[in-house]
Length: 87
Image (cartoon, rainbow, N blue to C red; front, top):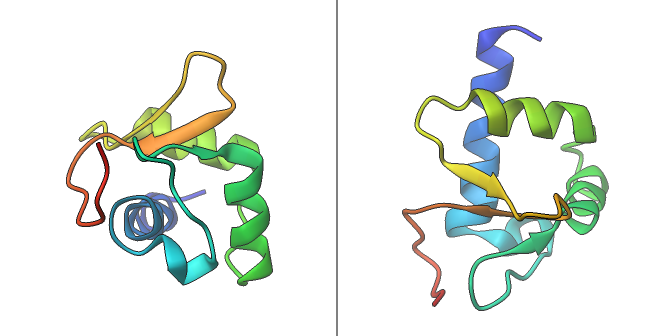
């Protein structure tokens, strides 16, 4: 995957994890977390398919460290910059 594609996927993740989760029909918990499998399934249903490996690469290579997985690797969230209410 080229840098442009990674950037495009990162921007889409920012949209749904920081600003408009309803874009793909998801709800974040009170701390901004969502189950990774639920996120990927919702993305696929809305024409934005991404594999788990690609998601991990986007998180790992994001130069601004915008996203993180929980300690189990089963949930993901944006680290900052939310315009949706979270605790």
